[in-house]
Amino acid sequence: MKSDYDLFVVGTGVAGAAAAKKCAVAGLKTAISDMQVYGGTCALRGCNPKKILSAAAETVSRSQALKGKGLGKEIGFDWRPLIEYKNELITSIPGKTEDGFQRAGIDMFHHHCRFLDRNTLSCGDRKISAGRIVLACGNRPRFLNIPGEKHLLTSTEFLNLPELPKRIVFVGGGYISFEFANIAARAGSQCTIIESTLNPLRHFDPDLVGILTRASEEEGIEIVTGMSVTRIEKTGKAVTVATENGTELETDIVVHGAGRVPRLDELDLKAAGVEVKEGMVVVDEFLRSRSNPAVYVAGDANGKSTPLTPVALMEGLSVAENILGRGGKPEYSIIPKVVFSEPKLAGVGLSEEQARQTKLKFRVNFQDTSSWSAERRLGLKAAGFKTIIDEKGEKLLGAHILGHNADEVINVFSLAIKYELGSEELKKAPWVFPSVSYNIRYMVH
Image 1: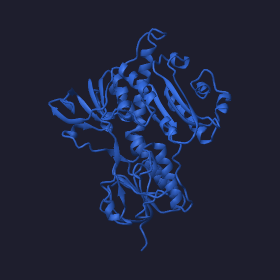
Image 2: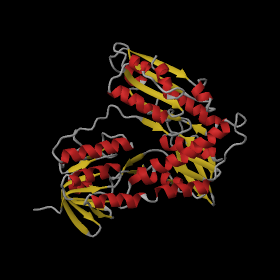
Image 3: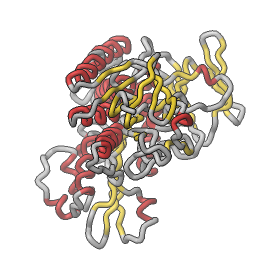
Image 4: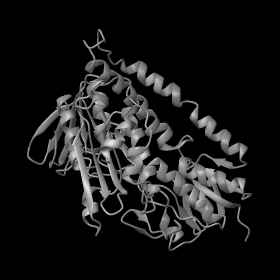
């Protein structure tokens, strides 16, 4: 039987948009659907709006650090106008996203989708069949299974708060909590992060995380580790957060920062014969479902992915290449990651622990750089780096940075690792001076 479409994509974030547009331009009859407004989490409810707020926090931090050193007074937060400015910057994204799909000849639906069989979806009140189906439906906060969980605010709700309360508790010690707490603390809120393990930001270098943690605590952020939240209770306008040691903390809001999981439970994957293991679709090296080769997964739900926007984009393009018969395997070995805290924390390549698990001989350069001029001229009190270098070939294996412009400098290290540049090549490069990138020559010494 002839299908309604050659390709049907669920989700309009970077992964779904990349796959849909590439296939449509190549001549496939393509459709896309999203139950939320078009544009995806990153553009509308995550990376972009968060970065607007973190930029304000960075400006406030600089003014605080340089008060009396050329600046006459501190700059303060004005939360409501900041949220209005954030909304102004992202309000055009859904319309521009739809315009892009329309120009590519892609049919658009605004409905929840679920599988009826291996090649058929229910989309609103329509049944739609497709030769290939791409799942790029993003993620949601994971269920914590604790009493009072309904009182947790999501990251989306935090980003839309019309007023910032005086007291905030963040459950979980990952990206979301550290980024939002660093913003809220500089806006005057009393912030507490509660992490169930002993290691917050566990995907980053622990030595640099230690420096960031101390800097956050100096900013007034309380960080509690090795402690699980057991109950959340709302009484009037206040919220009580109880932990496993019997402590009860009263706050104004509680924000969910304890991880996200793929948004798969609404798709009825069993009807499509799509195998799921530990909450992820089981896929082959081409991101195709092992149990139903008509289904591809790009983004957070394929079991291979890291929930980062550049990875989702790479996977969306790889899926399109595979659907078009060109073959394309995503490359996961070099994925830079950043926490947009204050200061920023970044890493790429091997961690020190991962390097020790290899048979390579390597050396580690680790230094607290808070006394360096690049940091002092900005008034930063916390900065550092760690690089892992192969002793035999002097090739860079991993780089980890805490400090100003870490989100930009890490891209240089990503290229260096990808193209196997040696430490001597990095030292001899004519870096601009004075700049943070200039210090790369000392980081690989």
